[in-house]
Amino acid sequence: MRTRVKICGITRAEDALAAVTAGADAIGLVFYADSPRNLSLAQAAEISRQVPAFVSIVGLFVDAAPDFIRSVLAAVPLDVLQFHGEETPEQCANYGLPFIKAIRVKPQTNLLQCVKDFSTAKALLLDTYTPGVAGGTGHAFDWNLIPSAMTTDRPSGLPVLILAGGLTTDNVASAIKQIRPYAVDVSGGVESAKGIKDAAKITGFMQAVYGLA
Image 1 (cartoon, rainbow, N blue to C red):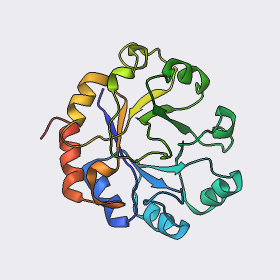
Image 2: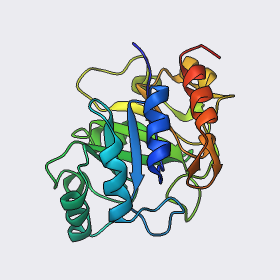
Image 3: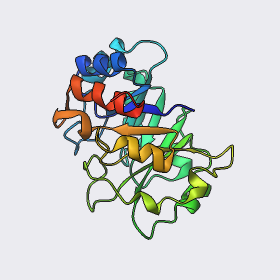
């Protein structure tokens, strides 16, 4: 099974097109005011108009008010919601769209319990824990903290695994070999500056994922 790729933190239409051209399966739009990759509704709507069929548009939220999420959905044709805060399973499932739940991994995190708690999620995205930061730190976590029951021995019907946190062209191939995730998620690893993607880095990352580098 091939590894899917999501390029997150897109802030410009040209970066979305670069991701699509390189073969990305999804792009991520951030709706979180504290993030340097935060978008206005107008920016997000413009980017979404550039995305062709069969590429998913994922909206990222962090403990957002329901009314705010609904305002985004009214303006931007999101395919999937991604929650990076302390949202409950019921809150995540409240919008009639498939959702991804991000888990910021610490040594004491019970990932198997997270699988049970968020069994209605389409995927669990494992990211690096940094105090006070919701994600996008550019640092990898210890992949050995991921139990085999979430990777090679994962039962069918449970959320798939998306690996995030500090992935780059240099380490993504080894991450895929060790973890065998359904998908990988990259943001800072393909940027020239926060929120500004580098087309060459995106291409290099995709080539590393598929063993073409």
